[in-house]
Length: 147
Image (cartoon, rainbow, N blue to C red; front, side):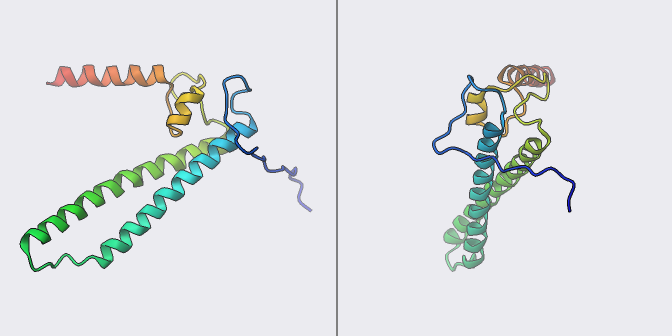
């Protein structure tokens, strides 16, 4: 027999939406964001699989040079999009790990909670809005100094 305590899975009520009024990152809220991240990752992976199939089926050896150039441009654009999505999947996986560690939803810079509205809009956010704005201002200043 296992000595680990049994944990019941958190049930997500239908139509649940997290609010600022409830305890931040309670089990139901964590489950909400976990499922949101998992759905997003599944959608990205499905799109990626479809792209791979379409690219394998598409013949770039078109007789017309303009058609060939257009197809190659489309393929390059599609590959850049998939590369961005691959990076996004990596961030989704990191957010899912944070959920497992109990660190999800907290700013990496300040340790303060990230607003529910920000997490709804960008569930992979690692910085609070204020910290993100500071970070972007600092980047702009450094870029301006280099120019």
